[in-house]
Length: 150
Image (tube, rainbow, N blue to C red; front, top):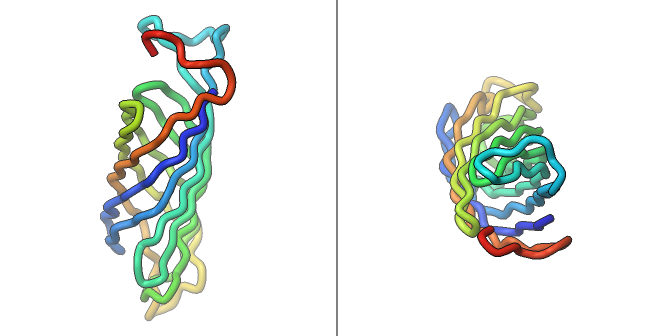
């Protein structure tokens, strides 16, 4: 098992574009007796939590599950808080794909709207958004160790 804290930067595209800066904490477990394997590698399962500032007092939080190895998928819940911006808050589904090169992680994620908070004519919902993210992470082995060739 590894715990992976890191810095996260995201460019957000959609009705309410922004640049998010913050952090991510994730963990992955790679069971040795797992049935699903590919190319002599194991698929890990785990979770993640993210917190980012979008500027203007707006923040985004996300939590969820992830599965993969060098390439993986994540699925969870996100909340984009309104802050002092001209947009309403938004609850959404967080869905993404990531490429992990150990310390550097790139991802493409979507936020699919579920429900806006305090939406009105002057504070519309941010709506659907796509985000391109880069993270610099520090993998910390918690259980077991790093095996040669990993």
